[in-house]
Image (cartoon, rainbow, N blue to C red; front, side, top):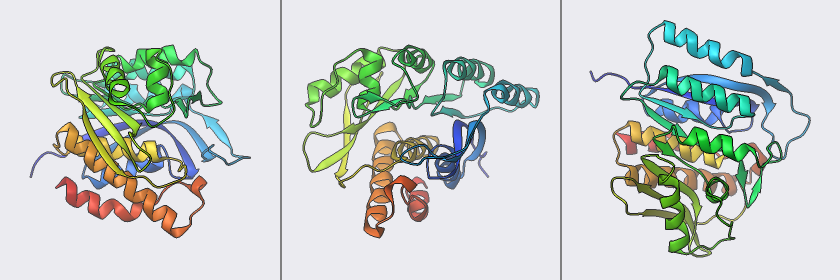
Length: 281
C-alpha cells in the first residue's frame, strides 16, 4: 500500500460554526490524508454574526506543540495555516514552518484577514505587513481579492472585474516569491463566481467558475482552501485542484441555501464529502 500522506493544519477551532479546523480536519481527512492540528485558539462559536462567544487564546502552546512533534521525528507533506489572531502568532507560525518543513514539505498559507474591501474588525491595517511576510515563506497562497489588494498595495475594486486586474494581481502575488497563487472571489459577470490560479513556472492564469448563489456564507474560504489542499496532496495539478475546490464549495453553498439554513452556521460541506473522495481517487 502507498504511504499515507500527512498534513498539519494551523487554525483556530470553533465548537459550533463550520470554519477553520472544524472544516479543515474532516475535508483533508476525507481525502485519505492523516491530518494533524495545531489549534491557535478555542472558541465556543465562530465570530461571524454570532455574539457572546467564549475565547481561549493558545498562543503560548503553539511552539511547544511543534517542539514536541519535532522531538518525535514527525514529518509532514504539507503545513497549512489559516486564521491567525495576532502579530505574535504570525511570528510563531513562521518559526514553525522553519522547524517542521523538509525539502518536500508543501507550505500553504490562507492569509485570512479581510473581505469586501475591509479588514476584519479584529485586525488593524498594520497586520498586513506581517501576513505578507508569512506568505513569502509559502509555496501556495490563497487570498481573496481584498487580501491580495492589501498585500500588494493595489486599489480595491468592486466586482465584476476585468482580466487585467486579476492577472496583474496574480503576477504581483507570485512576486512575493511563492510558487503558485490562487485568488478567490473572482468574477467577470453577475452570473458566475470562482477562482483564478497562476503558477510561477507556467505564467498563465487559469480560471474556474460556477453559477453564483446569492448571499454571503461564512466559512467558504476555509472549505475552498481545505479542498484545494486535499486535491493537491492527492496528486491533482493546480488547475484541476482549483476546479475541484470551486465545485465542492459551490455545491456546499447550494445545499445550504436550498435547506434554508442560517448562513451564520456555515455551509453543508459534509454531504459532499463522498463525492469529493470520488473525485480525488
